[in-house]
Amino acid sequence: MKEEHKDFSKVPWHGIPRKDIEWYPRIIEESCIGCGLCYLSCGRDVYDFDFKNKKPLVARPFNCMVGCNTCSMICTQDAIEFPSLGWLRNIIKKNKITGRAKKKIKEIEQGKSEL
Image (cartoon, rainbow, N blue to C red; front, side, top):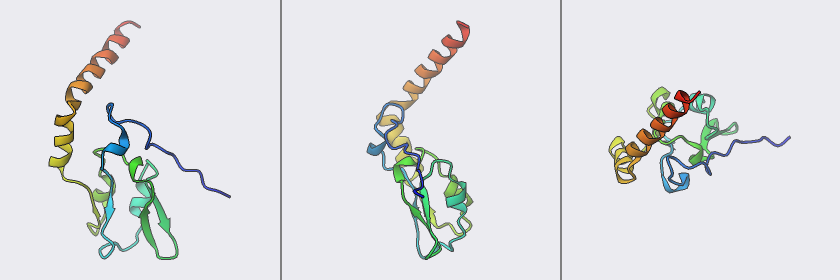
């Protein structure tokens, strides 16, 4: 039976094509103990698990939600890396994401007041 995987790679992030943003986990192989917490905890279907080698695989990197680093936070071996917070904030500033977010919040607020 073929396993179906979610595909979030085509969903833009605040108007930016997701594949234009290189935000995704990188596994430090020599540090990884193969516990599988990252694989089991990711709600965006980023990981597969290599049962033969007992290691997670970043199979769908662009499924990762930009800014999410939950898997690295729960990794007991610090075996998962992401780009720096500064790098992410530069993307936000360069693309005026804060302004876009404020505009979207205003649209949501106006939609609720019309109900």
